[in-house]
Image 1 (cartoon, one colour):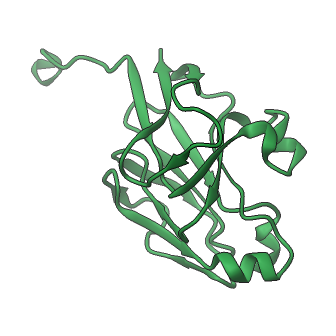
Image 2 (image 1 turned 135 degrees about the vertical axis):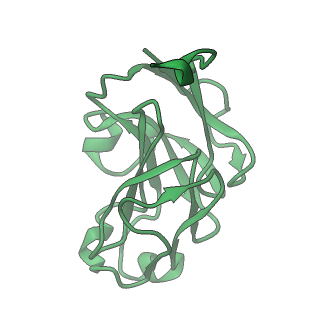
Length: 169
């Protein structure tokens, strides 16, 4: 009955590729206490140099903030999720300066364009563009998150390299 499961090995870890091109910063450097103090989950911050967000792995758009378009959650088949939150307090822009290329429920492949955003418009409105990329707390499929691979304050290029590893249960 379950022949399709034979030979399928459950992955032990998930490499999360950079969804944004920019400068990698510690989550502690994100100018929002909820993110900086790890209350939302583990991960990193990226100060973008390009206004595009790409899928960090193959998966499904679990949630897109449809009105504000400032954040997206991508879910891996393992159940692990990554929240990509463009800037801080950018929900207040009500979608101005943001364009979504996906919607909740869409299947996506690693490196697929999810969102575009206007860095200058966000900064002109007085908001930080430092963008948290985190694994939300409370996911049953996640054992731990290892953010130690890259040196903080290093440059990362979207779609090309891992920014952290999610160890799966």
